[in-house]
Figure (cartoon, rainbow, N blue to C red):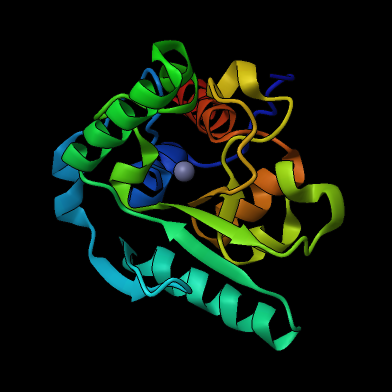
Length: 202
Ligand SMILES: [Zn+2]
């Protein structure tokens, strides 16, 4: 990452923000999810285009439904194909992936149980009309407006540990999403920057 700009925030302000902001939870190939996290969120179901019931965290789902409605008004389609997954569901998904494509593929594209962002309820997989030209695999201001980031953007594989996944959106809330989108950082880089700001001010 580039040079970190030291903020002029008051002591502890970033720390407080992090602690209180459950939408900034980091789950990746090196940060497993503590299942206690689920106690702090509310999961809600919604029906998708295939009439399947998809579950996601309340604000994540509400933001998606608002995005969907606004897109539909412009004659564009966006559909949710995956949301919250329990640890058991992640386990069987990974097994399927391995059986079909081998272990290496499964470990690259999949996540071990406990290490999938889908277990937080804040990650959704979507399919959509090519609304935004070639922005599919990269940062997207439209998604950011609704609080979503492209979690695994092109060119950040070395940070996220994942090949680009244009369909995988992660809810972090509008404010964070717009900052992340503008600065073209990953969630990992964004959190690191905030943490460094904290250390500096202590
Ligand atoms: Zn996903």
